[in-house]
Length: 222
Image 1 (cartoon, one colour):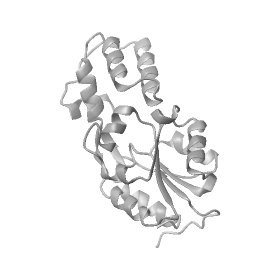
Image 2 (image 1 turned 90 degrees about the vertical axis):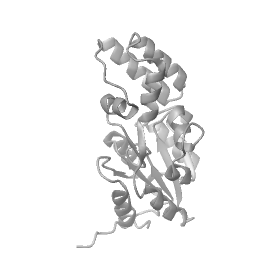
Image 3 (image 1 turned 180 degrees about the vertical axis):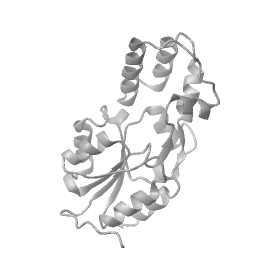
């Protein structure tokens, strides 16, 4: 049976992608990150205080309150040298595993329709941002192809906080169902839908391009 199209109440003006889990593959947890970096998983004492401290550091990195160097230094101190500054950086950089096949092609096809802007809204940090765009690594074609690039560390707030979605709306001069949004985390989808965005959750454990393509067809974008 052919897929049913969704007749939008409002024409889509912006197609917005999360990056990790939608455009690029990322590690699922510390063990996979260590494996990607070629490091062993070491046994160390983890306390509630150290977990809380790490969560705060990750939030600060994601919202741009600290940069990668400060983040790695604080992590090293927090684990009493269990991993070195250089090792934390290796794991961090290895966290991005590459692009999902076919997503760059979809973004290229969207770019051929100038009436619809193509953007990202990603929770990320300065190290991964530079890594994906080129200055700190090999650039990722799908990320480079995005016309409008918006990130938590640049906006100073992270999803699922509503304020980052509102900041994106102001930057893009679009709102509500004019925006079609793809993300792999349900809490981020929930906030987007609560303010009227057309939001589609992507399963990061399988190829994402077919999921994105189906949604674009259903919303009559491609």
